[in-house]
Image 1 (cartoon, rainbow, N blue to C red):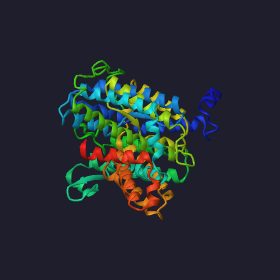
Image 2 (tube, rainbow, N blue to C red; image 1 turned 30 degrees about the vertical axis):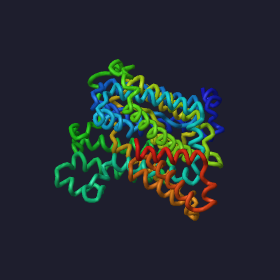
Image 3 (tube, one colour; image 1 turned 60 degrees about the horizontal axis):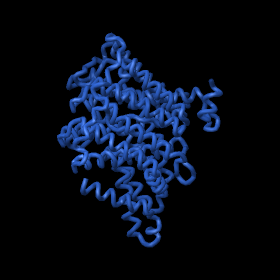
Length: 460
């Protein structure tokens, strides 16, 4: 069996082995498993059947990730993207008034356009056109983006009307009577960050996965002792898997092939498709750059050798998503958790894919893993990714300022796509007005992207 895996995934060539890839796959899946609970919850506000969306999420993640492994042999995973699902539900359906069936049609059309753009090398050219320093900046920005997701999920960072965000108040939690939910989980997340950091410092094999399991285990102990009291109405569920309802797979029928193309020629529909297209395109490119840099997959020119395969896999994933009934797929930033565990080939993706399939039968187990247990992993991975910042040429301000803009925009605007957009706009403007030398650094593709982003911000 090992010989077959070696021949197919070229493990030795990529300085890895079966054990490392399996641990990396487990780590990635445990980190991304929350999408199985969150995506149905978000999309169900549109009237979509929550059980059907759960099944669609697992199915499209299983198929998409398997396609990624087959086309690229990279440790990347595909799953419905957070952010794009919120846009689907709250902007397109609740805000603009479209039915979820029309929104699914827009996702399907987006998938068709993505396939065309990938086959004609347009997306590949965009990836290659981004300057090397900006790629390092995107990697660092994605690291900060992952970190803010982790801090938010841990409960350690909360919204504040006066300062926008603030640190969670443990003293305030006791006074308000929320210690058994918010307080204890924030404390467990803080301990989890320190435990994971210590495991990383001591080079313990499987440190990220161990950090997640230890933090979850501490939470279970707290629940059994009565220190943590589940309150599902406030989003604090039991940490113990609940198999009381047996094993059953929710039907896919309520959302399968339910796309409504009746508005396909309307201006509003075109705007929705373009918005999905822009966001998904640059979210994926940003994640690919960050994950590939973390896995040392970029060549000396900062290019990803088989980027076309990765982009094509994501295109097929989005196409399938529209058909089965969920929002667009994207390369998930959580794959960097597995990469940090040593995942370097498509075998990591295959492990994740199989686990997505098993989740259809074992959903209570996977859905019991709380965000405060996975958040430390995201924060530590964010730290690992931001180290790419030292590779930026800070002495050249025409490179440094756009890089800085891209880095800070991602966490503060909570969007990888916005970071790339503003980074490219500032790069073109600054270099154009810096003189002849700056003019030569702006490629034709960068000019096209510049004008597209300007159009997007002012007209879409």
